[in-house]
Image 1: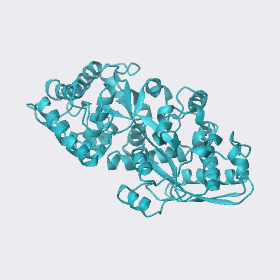
Image 2 (image 1 turned 180 degrees about the vertical axis):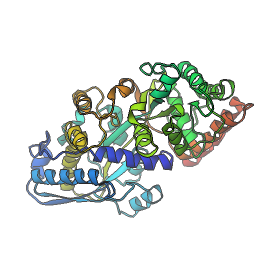
Image 3 (image 1 turned 30 degrees about the vertical axis):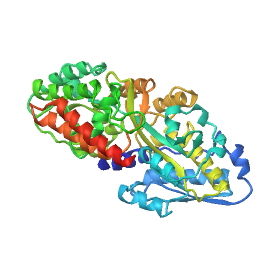
Image 4 (image 1 turned 45 degrees about the vertical axis):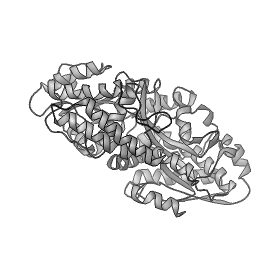
Length: 458
C-alpha cells in the first residue's frame, strides 16, 4: 500500500474524480440485454456497495445518486444500498472489517491489498460471471491481472494510474526552458533542475521524498523506470542492490550536492512537495496526474501552470489504483447484479465515471488522465477523445504522459511494501542529507534488512 497520507489523498482524489463523472442518460452497452442482465431480470436482488461519495462532496454524491436511479430504472429488480464511509479505506480498520465479515457486498480496495485478500479467501471468485462485462475483453491485461489468480478473477478495476514526472510549466518558462519539451532523460532533468534552482533563493529544481516511507516509494518508482526490480520474481530476495538501484541514488546525490538543485531542506514527506509545488517554487517531482489536482484544489496552485510527462527513460512504471471485490458471502445473483452496476458506473465510455460532459456541466475538472483501464483499444480511444472534447483543463499539458503510459509495462508495488519502503527511506535520506554517504554500503545494508523481512513472510 502507498504511504498512508498519500493513500488517503488518492482514495479521496481518485474517488472524487471517478464519482464526479456519472451518467443519468439511461443507456448502457451492457444494459438489460446483457447475459447477466437477463439472468438477474426476474428475481429481486439487493446489493450493498462501498465508496459512495460523502455528503461533504455534494456534486459527486448527487451524480452517484443519479446514476443509481438511472441504473435501477434499467434494472428495477436490483436495489442498491450505497455506503459512504470516508475515506473509503482506513488502513487501521480495513483488515479487521474483512476478517469480521463486515464488508459490503461490493467492497472497495486498493491494488496493494488484492493479493492478500485473494490468498486469505476474503473475496468471491467471479470468473463464471465476468463474460457479461462487454468491455472486459478490451481492458489492459496488466490492469486486469491485478485481480486475477491464475485463470480466476476476483474483482474489477475502477481506476488505474502510473507515475510520471510532474513539472511546473510556469517555472520552465521563467528559467528559459521549453514547457512544450519536458525532459525525456535523467540528464535532461538534471540540466533543467540546475536552471530552475539558479532563479534565486527558495527555488528548487527537483524535489524528492525521504521520510515516512515516501522515500522508499519513490525509490521504487525510479527503479522501475530504469528497468530494475525491488525484489526477485519469486518475492523471496531483495533485487534493488543493482546497477539500476545505484543509478537512482547516484543521480539524487549529484543533484543534491554537486548541482545544489534540490534545496537544503530534506527529509520531505507528501505534504511538503505538494506545498512547494503549489507555491510556484518547485520545478519537478515524480508523481501521477492526481498531484496536479491536489495542488490545484488544496495547495493554491493553478491547473494551467502544471504538466505531467512520462517518467524519463522508463521501460516500466509503478502502477496503482483501486477497484471492487465481492464479499465471499454473496449469491450468484448478487454477483451478476454487481457486475452490471460496475460496468454501468465505471467501465463504459461516455457514462458513469467517463461521462465527461456531465462533469463539465457540473463544474468539475475534466481533462486529467487519472485513469487508464484500456490503453489504445477502442474504449480507451473513445474515452480519451471525450476527455479532450469536454476538457476544462489543458489536456495538451499531459499528452506526453498519456503517450508514455500507453507504451510502458505497469508494475505493482513489491510484497511487504511498507516495511521495504521504511528501510529504503534510510538510503534515500542518507544521500540527501550526508554528502559523504556511501551508496554501495547503503544498498548493501538495505538489502540485508529487506531479505530478513521477506524471509519472515515466506
